[in-house]
Length: 159
Image 1 (cartoon, helix red, strand yellow):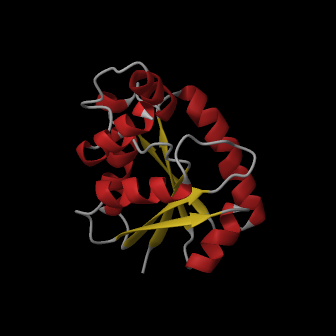
Image 2 (image 1 turned 120 degrees about the horizontal axis):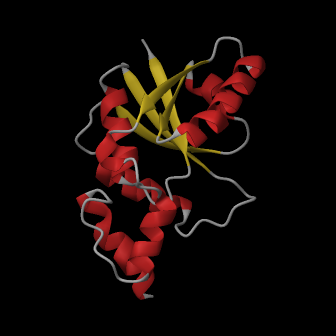
């Protein structure tokens, strides 16, 4: 069974993320979308909120599971019995950073492979940071976020 992990902060999950999830779920038997709980960052959404949004956005995918982790990705992958990391790339800048991380992960665990997927051109401009800025100023989130999560993001800024 081919099991892959798509790691990220998903703060919040965007249509760009969902595109990578949809496409990679067709390539592997099981895809674990793994939300990093990074104590060095202060995400807008709690870990529980990010899990909820991802579950809503991926409910149509039978082979996708949502999980959380902290620490090294390769350690999480070992526990999950996975050896493929899925990463989405929007630009050359993404590639340079992700290439470095892929090489490091290969050093940490020689059985790990990284699968890079180019983001669909329709979503290449979308990032969680951009989405949060649009939401903060009351902009239209249609097309930026999975439909099922738009109200959750809007509510966060109404508080």
